[in-house]
Length: 180
Image (cartoon, rainbow, N blue to C red):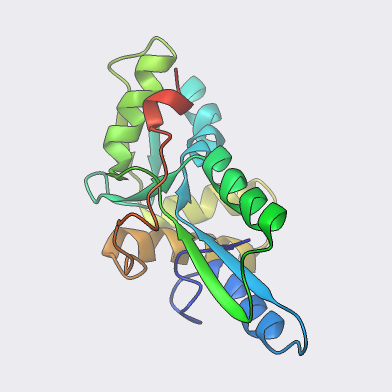
């Protein structure tokens, strides 16, 4: 299991670690390695439920209207299980799983809001300094916080969005199905 952006080794926060792991796995001799590079999980929006409950908004450091690939975890599991069941990969390879289409954070917030009975739930891009302060105050390490913020910034600027949807990368589950 890897991630979009793992082909880069800096400027992408947490994803640099998955890129380093890909390099290590690719150095193994005599084994087949398949890297499943998934898009941003739709279910990641669950991590902001506390903010939604406390503040009545959803927010991260990522821009509200920048569309990115998002995928349901069940679609990634289905792809991985299919490859493991069929053993249809050899050498060192990558399978990208990006979901049915790109979504903005504002759009996903609206979908979540409708699912929880708050159709007016809004998304707010939060200032990096405030997010850093809150995360550190919650006991997260400075290194982890920096990497998380760098990932959010890389998403927001489009730095990590290099893949394109096509028949080999598209999966079926929509955000509305994840958040019924």
